[in-house]
Image (cartoon, rainbow, N blue to C red; front, side, top):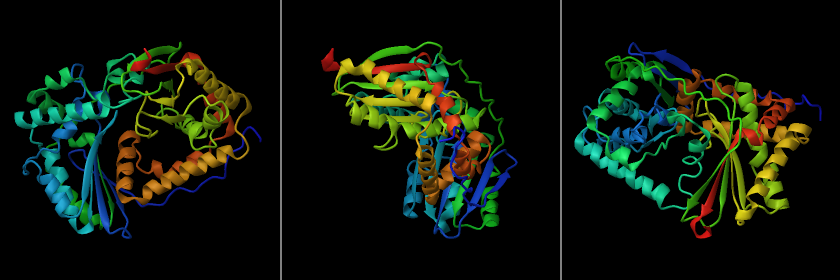
Length: 438
């Protein structure tokens, strides 16, 4: 296979996007599709775990909960009632670099959904009662998802603490109980004033609507919201690792050992092509039974029971800015095999760096990712979220439509270069040991 080989260039996906900015700074993306009998509304705020003040771990996630506790004109639970009584669904989430809120409604209920999102952008109900209630809810979520579950929060809670040195990148985004208990209404009000300004948000609307009518509704409900200064986003950059870092974490509930390897990767905002090459590398390493690591570590050597490779904190490679990482995780029955697992991973990376991809391997990975992107955009709810996310993080909602073509431009040489950079001296390793094994 020639070293510069690549797959046939894929055409961009086709959706007509319209962009507007209101006088208060809110960015609006409209993506009409009259073939879908529903509308999706997504609001993405440029605030996430990395934005939390020191001493207030978990605050971004806590505030996400507060945004569902009533707003300027709505009592607690009324947001839920209006969406569900319309036949719709809704949710929200917190990530490293954003917090999002979204709902899918029948097309005729578009204005209802816009009113709901505008009302809480204007003024959520931040009260002592609501805050105390949601602190308890978040603490219970931590108990269920982390403290009382095998491998709870693994590796997104453990790996950053080892491989990063600054508070924004290294701290526990779920939050410590002490920090959550110390949160005040004044803290919440300040957080809202700082980060929930219209100019710090993107609103997307997708589905069955008339763009002119939708924009008129957006103006009616969102334009009167007071303009506030958009916060300046700090530079969260950190230098890459120059020596391996390792730690052992004891998990009393884990039945077998587990391993997480983290490699710092290129800034997606600075070198998008190299970053996409790393995305394809992760696909080649672990997607499916025919992937490199599965063939080597599971089928051939029998070292691990499962293995995965992915970029970002939660598996979406394009939901974080810099710094971000490539994660490789595995579970295995024999704690004494840790070094053998690491050596097997190293061997596959060296083989990729020196020999390149196998015939058809790069093509398959590209087609698989392109199909995944296309499938995601078939769903109106996912589509609205992706357009808002790409507009917020990369300043270009249409970038996701061009991704298949950009992926198909990646060559074997690109893959070899990123594989060569993933060396033992550039990684952090978290080993989870079952409590019974101590």
